[in-house]
Length: 317
View (cartoon, rainbow, N blue to C red):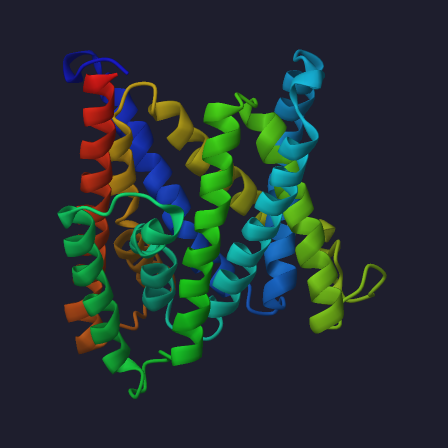
């Protein structure tokens, strides 16, 4: 990455577009309430797989395939399971708690990382502890809105937080395979996303009673191919998928990863605004107004601490 002086203005515009794109996913998925949540998650993965397929074919045909070991494939299988658990639990939470609460808890993974550091044998520094304390206290405060009439439920918040826990496994494996094993991005992302879609489809058939042959698109594993649902899945795949996550990876060429990470922590704020603009309603209790910013601030502190550590490692390398 170049210096700030060499960072083009359009890179920040692209980052803003990516933030809007990924932040819109929650509101869109919540409006697809006719579809069972696990099936909805599977549709999301199936659509994204189609978007990733051309890149996979190109990179797969131009790489040394023997460079991918059996262990790499097993890690990709594990990563796909984490991704399926992440999307399945998060989308389920959208049906069982408020949009803002769902986004706050599912994006709290920096706090989860701190809790896992002692288990992973990673040094926990003051910034980690401070950020985690602020974030988890904020999370506890937001739970004060559970007894209200604003749609916030404990089980929904727990499901969203479980989405944050499981995405950590997906991110850790992805970082290892992309950085340490140098696996091309589409060669990693396509099979992981496709397998996650298959896992979610199988879970939906077993739990939600859906099937491949159902006459009702809303209960069919491939029901997104119906004309009524194609625009929804296409947007989720091309918007949050391509214009969101792919653009985020692109702007890292110019913008510091720490800036990108902190920017994305504002997804609950932007996502809540998008939901309010779309529906004209917003569920925001007084305890969420107090605890929500604390959760975001705590995650920012942790992210900044991680950025400082990476910077020190570069200086001493």
